[in-house]
Amino acid sequence: MDLGLVMHSGGCHCRKVKWRVQAPKSVVAWDCDCSDCAMRGNTHFIVPASRFQLLGDSERFVTTYTFGSHTAKHTFCKVCGITSFYRPRSNPDGVSVTFRCVDPGTLVHVEVRRFDGKNWESSYAQTGVASCSKTDESAQREGSS
Image (cartoon, rainbow, N blue to C red):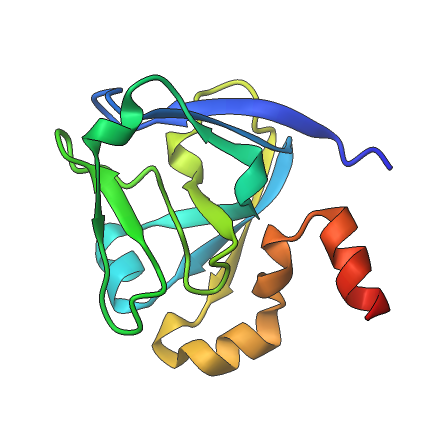
């Protein structure tokens, strides 16, 4: 099955943190109003962790903040402070990529959907966001069990 995946590159403002991610040209991004995303204005799309790769020595410039359940790993650059990606609570097996941190030229369409982070549990159940970090193969395995 052709998912229309392309390689996107991106990173933080100072470019100390750089990555590439395999995702469609057209993505669904989540505009979350939880206390963290709302303050940062973070709108992100989610991919399976296997499709995300930090480049070069980026890891040494990344620091992590957690709160609440400590499931989400909110990462940001130690130099410029930009969150270009993180591990979301909704998809601990995936990576959330801040769509505005993708280098120009490969994303052709971004559909923004709302995630009610203030009412996290009900929004999680209603949106289907958990499926965003599944590859077709893992989704098929889960569907057959």
